[in-house]
Image 1 (cartoon, one colour):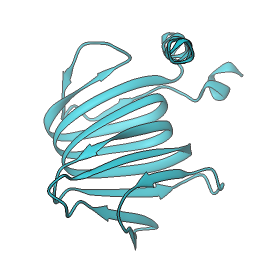
Image 2 (image 1 turned 90 degrees about the vertical axis):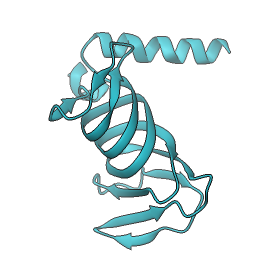
Image 3 (image 1 turned 180 degrees about the vertical axis):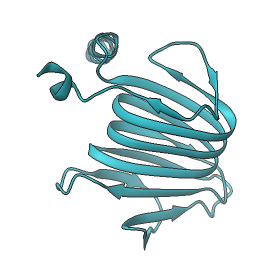
Length: 147
């Protein structure tokens, strides 16, 4: 538990310095995340998750129960089960496009997000903001902002 508190404290300290952020977003529509760090969440039945590695490195880690099909340079997953799908994605540079009813969380994330439809998001514990206000900056990678 102490490790979790220390990890969360490190993430919040980094986001306060304008680097990485934490993210909470939930709604119906399209959530697009492009950047790095760790994101995880759930999607409802008939929702889709597209995951594309943008880094060219072998550092993308994707955990999604279900068979993905090759699509648009990545893998597309569809939630066929009534329970939906849980997902976890991490890496240095990737794009995730989620369509449908979904909940998205991020720790140590950087890059940008676009949220379209009906929902709201919060960055680094701030107030919830309605979706649909264009691109949202999630800060820079800690190594990029430190140099």
